[in-house]
Length: 63
Image (cartoon, rainbow, N blue to C red; front, side, top):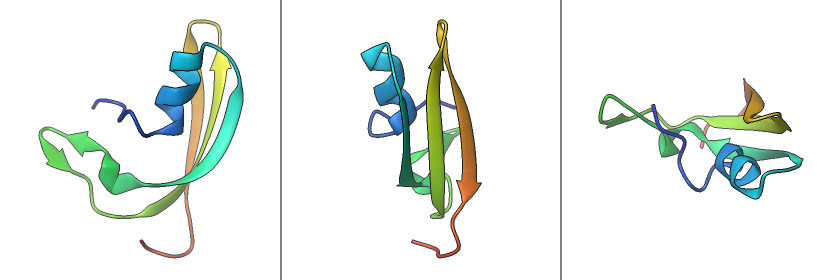
């Protein structure tokens, strides 16, 4: 699975600092060449050392 460039996870890692939390759509992601189903999620990303700690939780409404 590859982190999409529009994801907050990518942005925090590329910036090299910070913490962000935003709403995203899970269908931005691909696994084994297929997009995941649309689902509204909250993504909290925090840079830690050489990586990003992430918490992804579903939102109540579907996109």
